[in-house]
Image (cartoon, rainbow, N blue to C red; front, side, top):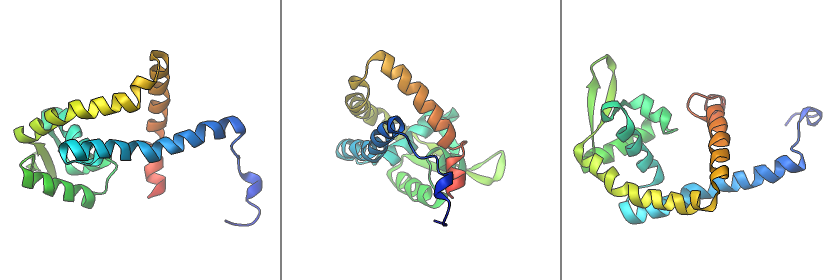
Length: 165
């Protein structure tokens, strides 16, 4: 860090720090907690399940690989390795994008759809256990608003990813 830049820093005040530290802890611990359940029950990581879920929710259960990578906060090479594994399992197929010859689509197969259907109940139960069962309805509404605002800033269309890369 360059000398003299400390004067320009807007340090967190006590209230902000008391919000930031638990948020930081949550961001570090939630995904591994979900990974444990998904790995045990379905042989999937949270990232892998998110890829399958994103395909299951897409129109026609298909997405361009580059769009799927963006939604999953992944690089194309990392996503491609996951899609390779899913192809070997019969859960996903690749096909050329008929509207853009330069693009490839990932298509969720019927077997992939069944994997999502089988995996979702245990995943949702764990999400409820870790998050929603601990909050009041008012807190859930607040969480939705707060998480939505932060995701808009940092998500695939926000500024965080583009500044970090």
